Length: 205
Image (cartoon, rainbow, N blue to C red; front, side):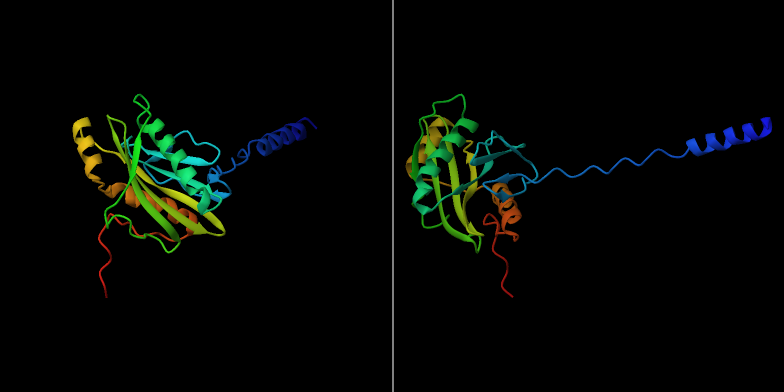
């Protein structure tokens, strides 16, 4: 009987030495949403103080560059939201400066080309506060019954005197890196990649 007891204990010990239960695989973080719209933040950008209805994403490489996303009820509410976006952008990239910017639209015949089949409105504006000039590209996307106002912005690297001249002349260049990042953001929403207007159009076949 003693031998049987020893055998039983050995067998019991063997059964207890099995591998521990597998750790469940980590689940991916849920995609961010805004006003019921799911999107993906492009690589190289981080959310910067998202509010209830406006998301701003700053470049990790160039803090003066960024993207934004918001939803509007209708075309009639667009101008009020644009003013709100401009205030958010100024507070984000020029926080230690005068927050009173004068804003002007782009009056040049180029620079407002359509980038997506879902695009229903676009414009470019720039603002100046005596120190810095900010250029903002707006694009309104109509998709799945929602109106999304999105785009990108950058702070001119010019000196205050040069920025003042650029503002008076209405000079509004584009930023190659921002066009691609914006296309990635909108593509994650509508399911197809808009054209990056900072790049040459595709060659005709």
